[in-house]
Image 1 (cartoon, rainbow, N blue to C red):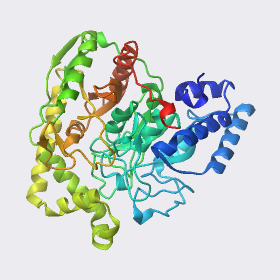
Image 2: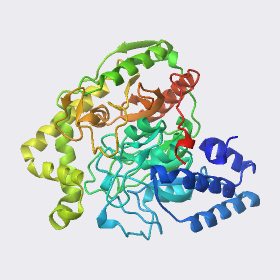
Image 3: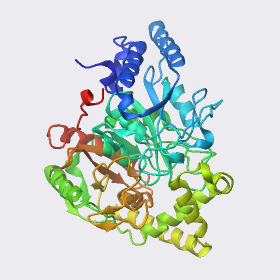
Image 4: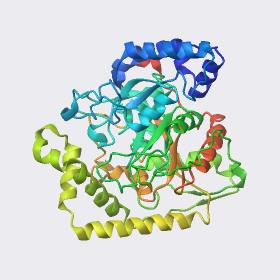
Length: 475
C-alpha cells in the first residue's frame, strides 16, 4: 500500500487541495520514513519537528477554512544545508559553522516557504558544497539508497538520497560542476539545473559568476517543475536575475517526433567508464527512434578543463581565502585544494580561461541552430564507496584532479545550459543510471517539456524506468 510520503509532490498537493490528504498526515508519514531509513543513509542532518508539526497544523487549518493555498501548500520540503533556514541549524557542512542557527531564510528558501511549503529538514552536503561525495566533519557521509556503503554523490547528495526513499516529496539543490545532476543520477531521482538567474542566487562572494545555480530536485520531472515554480523570482542583487521568467505554470510533454537530437557519450572531452558508455549506448538505442532525427555528435569543448579549473579556482579564492589563512586546520581537503589551486593562477591564466569559456558558450549556442536537444550521460562512473573521497582513475587512467571525473557535467556548466538529469534504469552493477537532457541558456521550458516526454516514454520499459530502492535493506 502506498504511504503518503511515497506520493509524488504533484499528487500530494492535489489531494491536499481537495481535502483528501491532511498536511499533518503527510508530514507524519515523512517523519516516520526518516526514522526508518535515515540511520542507514544520514541524508537528513537537522530538523525541528515541533515547528514542522505546528506549521503542518496551520496548513491543515487553512485548507479547512477554504483559504487561498500556495502551490506548495502543506508539502514538506528539505533544504540543502548550504542555504540558510530561519531557526534551523545551517552548517554548510563546515566545522566553522557547526552551531550556526540563522535568524532569517535565504531568499530562495523564503520564496519556497511563502508558496506554502513546510520547511522542516536540512539535507547533508560536503563542506561548502566542495566535492561530489557528500561527506563532512560535522555530520559524516551520506549513503546511497541502493547501497548505503556507497556515495550518493554531491554536493546535493543528502537531498537526492532523501527523495529516493520518500523522506520528503521535494528538496532543494544547487549545481556548479554537477552538484545537482550527479546526485540525481546516483540516487535515481530527477534534478534540474536552470539557466543562470532563473532562480536568483544573491549573496555569493563573486556576483558576476553565472556558473553556480540553485535548482529543484524531485522524484519526477513534474515534481521538480512544481518546486521550480516556487523558486523562481526576480532579485536585482543577482545580476543574472530577470524580471520575467519563461517557466510555465503548466508543463506539457514535448512532441519528441518533431525534434532533432544530438547524442553524445562523452561530450568529446570527458573520461567515461567503458561500462557506463556501453549502458548509455544501449539505453539511447531504446528511445532514439522516437525523435525526428538522432545523430551521434559532440559539442565543441576544446580547452574546457582549463577554463573550468581556473574559473572555479578564482571563485574559491574569493570565497575561502580568508578562511584558509585563519582556519586551515578546520577546513577539509577539497576546500583547501581548490583555494590553493586558485591562488597559484595568474592574471594571464584568468584571461585565457574566460576567453576559452566565451568560445565554448558561443559554440554551444551555435550548435542549437542545427539541433534542438543534446542528450548525454549524467555521470561517468557507477556509485563508489563513500569512504573514497573522489574517483582517482577511470579504466586505469589516473584523474589529474579530484574533479576530472565530473567533466560530463562541468563541461556543460561552462556553456551555461539548462539541463535535466533523469533516471534511466540501472547500470551493470545494479545501481541507478541517469542521463542529461540539455539545451542552451534560456531553453528551460523546452528542456523540461522534453524531459517530461522522455520520462513518460522511458517509464513503459523496465530497462529505462526509474529504479526504486529496497527499503527493507535500510531499516
